[in-house]
Image 1: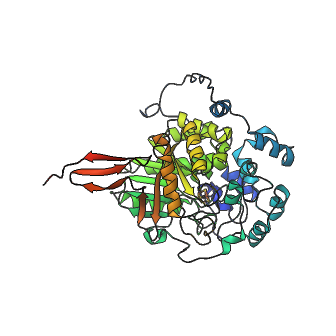
Image 2: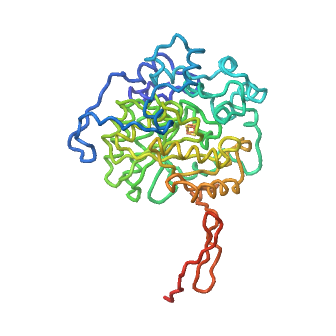
Length: 446
Ligand code: SF4
């Protein structure tokens, strides 16, 4: 095997499968004390270095819990039971969390009362995705209830091996829109850059199950340079979404190198990072990380939350750090059967995200990936949820419901039908309460 360069090794993605070697861990994971200076010449970065004013104490109990921070009670109890010897320093170290992910049947069986469905699913080893859950996210799972929403999304089930009509390993046809490995160019002015294929926790409904965790998409300099070359000679691209895998699983200097290379391309304006870290490993959002990210403003982030139980004080601390660094935060939520497919759960999730300074952005109909039948619910259910939100709560709390068209057609927005029709010069509308209204809209001849 050819020797890896130091930069090639500076990624966690080389771990899957089967596991990081000790030497790789040392090289991949940078020193916790490393700090990166912010250039004073970047007008997007505030030069105010004084401590922010303390928050005005909130009377709202949830907001108060977010303001206070600390450890949520479930995590505290889990830690006491399964990791009593682990220091606060280790538990709050994202590298420790990444190294101690729960991956084996024996570990799951010790921490959860497994159903036969789960036991068989873990024994079979996952259909396409590897298995892995951070100790922090494990602490949020219900030990006794296999149908608890969060547990359903990360513990494999034998249902993953059932293939039904219309499913595909690559339902969005990404491989057919990939001019170089790990770059998807489907829309005219924007691209998806798959930085690596590693995630700290694997979501069983993942659209990219075919590549995530396979060890094929490493953050190697050679592969990424080919992507940067393509971008440099494709001037219509102005927007890059860095995803994966989870880009925040990269060591800071590796991610900084990627951002620096993208910012060196004159026509690239808009850079986003897609990540689930604040939900599954909020400890990853360190002061060092946000100091580095701030250098690349304007930088946006798409976070991935799917249930109110993920919105813990730890997650709120992570999103507060990102928001304080001036990073606009949007969320992408996948609609999943038995997880979040009811109005009450979705409303609670959206409200919590607003308290965490995250703007609900997209609600995705679950893509028909192979083995996803047990996760998919009907389009009518998605429309019912949007109808239950629109007008009934804050407009900012209503995401855009979309289907990513199978085969690569892109995102298609769906709305309940509020336009009943036209009568002469009136458009007839209905509001969120079902009442009818007319809007005078004379037909203007061109
Ligand atoms: S974090 Fe994202 S890329 Fe990783 S397994 Fe979950 S959905 Fe897939």
